[in-house]
Amino acid sequence: NAGVTQTPKFQVLKTGQSMTLQCAQDMNHNSMYWYRQDPGMGLRLIYYSASEGTTDKGEVPNGYNVSRLNKREFSLRLESAAPSQTSVYFCASFRDRAVNEQFFGPGTRLTVL
Amino acid sequence: AQSVAQPEDQVNVAEGNPLTVKCTYSVSGNPYLFWYVQYPNRGLQFLLKYITGDNLVKGSYGFEAEFNKSQTSFHLKKPSALVSDSALYFCAVRDDRGSTLGRLYFGRGTQLTVWP
Image (tube, rainbow over all chains, first blue to last red; front, side, top):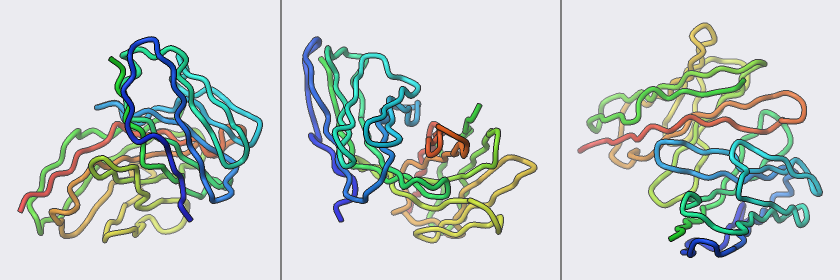
């Protein structure tokens, strides 16, 4: 099992450009999450998807959109990137029992100039 | 509302000494508590969790955590620190109710440095 994979690993954008961060999991998990990590802020939830076809906003959804393409894949899109979106982005998945832990991808380091 | 506090941004210990990384939580229902570790330029790795049962939970790499309901704490401990334990540690709590099932609330992280 590859677990949770993310592409790309690194990306540099100019202000106003758009891009999509890809995430896939091969553990047959229903729930998937997108977080951003900023120094001193911990991880903040951007969007999550409790099942295929559903998405919900987290703490910091502004400036982002998501698509749950199928059970495996959950993408995060920045339509018009801003410097404030410079961050490390993590995708995670979860098997639907409260006792279970989330599994994280390796992250995407995004810089917006 | 669910929340986690990690009161120390940094913890420094000498190799071989015991270490403690502190965490307190606030949750409406029953707490499901987790510790994750992040090594430089890597994703988060699961260390251990408290669901129910014994208050002392054992996890990966010799770490353990003590759940204290009266103090709403879940401190991470290790009897003898290694230089390789140096990393960023996150405490997280789960909301076990309804539509938000699975959602984790993270602390801000504690940077652990173990010096030789």
